[in-house]
Image (cartoon, helix red, strand yellow):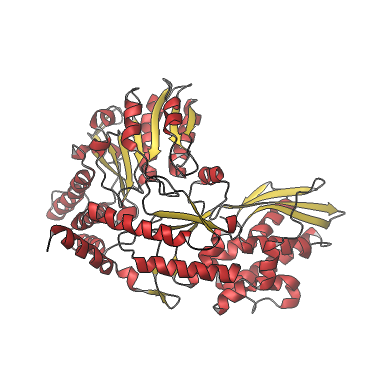
Length: 414
Length: 149
């Protein structure tokens, strides 16, 4: 068997790795099309967390006893896995956080608070998730800085020329999403980084939606910060990572104070720990990190190229299938898209929430609403969309069930 | 169609959602409030005209799903000529109806609103059915906005 065939076979078998997908919902086999909200977890991840609690649990970086050594080794081992996964240069560049939202807040509260002055600005795009809007609004409000929005076109592509025009000397940071959770648009990060770096502006990338679908190499992208959540890449909730270039991270003030982030404390003076611990105050989510590492292993056991190829084929199949559904309009048809199909029916007259309820009765899980991107919904003049999102465990059969379910929607609400 | 779905999307509900009654802004309202359902982005503005302690007219604008629109539309008719206190009592009954189902509330107590009883089989949709009512309560109590979260 060739390597490519081996990969394909491994991918076809992957669905069986996810125990939750075996169940019936309302008497019908579950079709899970809400992976952009959170992915399901393979047994390899679930077992890694169980194994950690059964055999290794102790606090990290503290005890001299055997369990603490094991726990520390597992925790730091997970950091090394995430570092390799993103192709960062050094483990110190990987800070464990609660998720993408906390990673962005960390940068806002350290980089933003220490660098933004009155009159400065931050550039984001019109397709950002609330988690890449609100932290900047908060810190800009505090520092007297301004938030500028790079517009998108009707297809859902960033208007690169407009973005470039916004990159004036007052801009202190560009913060953009890699893959849009609401449209599936894959942004040209390398180009954005080149434009920004040519003007000395650092770039943060919200990678939450990208990492389970595309190979991500932070050094190839050239970005300064990259934020991810484990739970959107088959890992547990409550943990994620911030990648930050060493030189930049070294220059930032601490974020939260507490244990683990210090070298020594007296009431007069505290000496802060080195990277990445300086940004990891308190006992971390050790089991979460172990699960995160197992998720990285899981993705790599299948291969990110293979996953991307599978999803690309499925996305094309689903796009054609949905376009054939009467009275359905896809929102977001960017040149390069990953895993997301956002749509409205009868020009939005059939509310996405009602679509979601009817599909749920058919055992089909989709997301309905504004996808934490209300400003983006305003760009398209809709309050909400229905969103089906794909992951490596989805099949054409899932898409066919969705299409049949949408027929039911028209029958009930038409 | 499953029975539950048929109960939720009764013909009257769909009809009200397609052609909501009193779906307009009110220039001479004596009170108004905005209601938000952050879960789905639904938002309504509800207007009330009170005269001598009695609700004379209610109207609304905004966007929402079939359930929230139908509930708001039905509300505008149901609270007319009621005192604020009576209107809020009716809210209590509607809330019981959409959470507990028809066994807890007799049809006479809620009149036409009985068509919302199917919501009780869909816990995720209770917020949709109650958004307009929370907004009415806010308006009657002089608050400018309210959220279902």
